[in-house]
Image 1 (cartoon, helix red, strand yellow):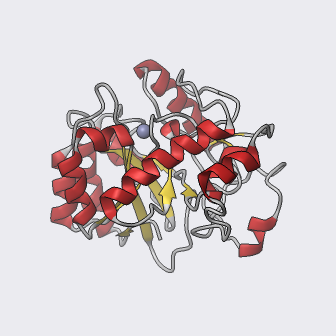
Image 2: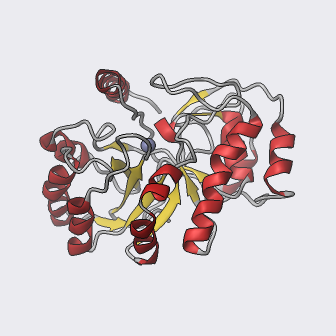
Length: 290
Ligand SMILES: [Zn+2]
């Protein structure tokens, strides 16, 4: 269900990412769904959709069995809104989910404390996608976030790579190159998050938010729901505050906003300061990913 506006946003996103030498981007729109759609083959489907929380075949045989199951499979699709990637959710009212990525790695291990303080003060729940490198750089802060009921921690990968089984790249970041590498990218941080929170993460988003469809199935077999987004709020924390605010004001019920929490000097925090009260005044209720 792509439209001209969506395509334009994608082009803008790609341009912003390339200009900044930084990651981000893509869009999807929420639509209705039924559980039996999950049983349909992935090949040939490209419409973004609401997906239930998890597939029933979680971790059958563990990560080694999942890697073996998908070894040698050849993907046909690539993107941010493939079937099986959650880009929205069914909302009874004007619910809207804010997700924040902490990408980690050189130059990306900071904490936007002003943004987190805003969420606390405004009691805005959020799902926080933490990369393993960010957790390793901020273990005490990560533990605090894990203990805060306002937030749910999710998996943003081990080395922040696009999730591919053929090494496909996105924004000049090389993707995982085999089923085993894709499993490792998910699972090493899965285990880190289990150690941190005491429970398995429910959601996963790749570095760059790009997947092939074999990788989407791998994530689901590992018991996590691959997540995209419907509102690209800050384009990898490269957007100025007024743009962040404007992007957030595109919120729709059941939508998922993507922003970043590791760039305290970006426009993300100031943009959220403006957008969150405005969205609340417009009747939106912020929720964690359901
Ligand atoms: Zn990231």
